[in-house]
Length: 489
Image (cartoon, rainbow, N blue to C red; front, side, top):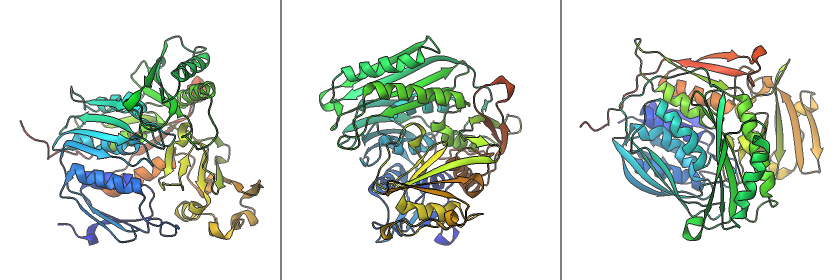
């Protein structure tokens, strides 16, 4: 049995799912310390504890140690077992939070996974089940994961804060994955969507469809948006509505966007017409960025490329990703908005977690913007701005204090309304301009730590062809991962 001396060690709560999933696949133990150690409520959150319990259910022989305050976690993975599982997810995060990790692990179980997840199916933070079904499943099929038992079905819908939804997911097991070449995304040939509503008037979904089509009909005629209005026990415990859109290309690429209404009792009321139009614009933005994998599934694609076969007689994996970062002549310009006691509505790419800090201290990621609460700003600064910047914050409970960098002229700071502070800084304080999401960059670092693999990254400017935004081409030779737990027949 491996000892803690041979485990990988990390600090902080960020990227918790990444580290646990990669630990499970690689078999390497991991120790995570100082989990929200400076927070008023230190330690793991309920949804993170629920995720750890889910890992314990689908594995056999895992060893999990958590100290009394929940600030230190030691995880020694067991064998992925699979089988029939039921799990009640925390309503603080949607089922998509758990499903994203299951999509990475399910193909490598001993027995085919058949799992029922209960909780929130659609929210403003995590990718919804509708989007994962329309984009992640076709991506897995390109790696050779397919079959009659490959299914993702929404039995009941549940909106925050009450939840009450239910999802069934089944996945066959595979011994090896095949390498892929996704270089040309192709042209958009059709757009499909799902407008859903629960515990509100059925007309809400129809109004969403009409407003979304008013934008999309200007570009392509082949558009069909379904409406889904669930009633009674199938409608969950809270009212809400939303829209998910998926554009399919001639080469089998799926690009998605989605929006959901504000949870009951939180924020201002959202008009269905505004939601439909904004979601259509987000889809057009995703199409402009392009790439062969949409923003939601880039980490999944990177992982499956890593686990591909190491065979010189077969082609290596190569996938073109979008590069959703605003750039100027000097490099990448990021914008940070730091607030206290205000939760911004997460729309579009903001639902993608740049830092997974959870609870009421979320960090949302946007292609050009990061939004964090003040209590997490110090941890963000310590983790990412050690190079070239003396970015520093006082404790949030002691009131506002300008960062040293603002006083030294490196940053320009503005106070808005006494409760909000905004900063602009150049790329050298965060990430080099040649990369895309720093969330993906951290995932690439984790892949190197767990599997000792490195990707070749080439930038692909849009050039004179005007095919949307800049792209990056990622290429690797897989590690030759083999599912030795798969039952022989």
